[in-house]
Image (cartoon, rainbow, N blue to C red; front, side):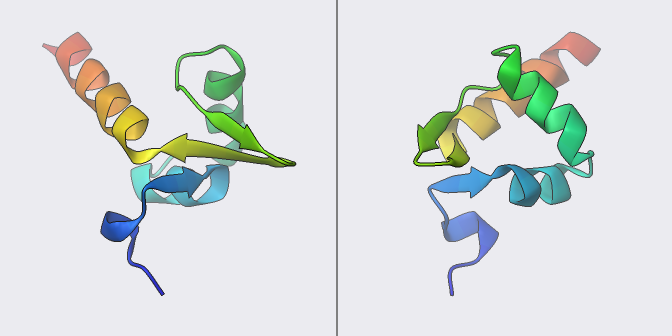
Length: 63
């Protein structure tokens, strides 16, 4: 099984757990387009690159 660092995309629950936020908030951010995502069948995936960019933007907003 791949570790979180080795994955190229995260499910909503995985990403929420990794960043310490609730799933509902992450679903809302994805719905608003604040966190880029892709849909594969019924699953919503957040590409690792998009997750990293979102975190960078959030850090910049804090400065």
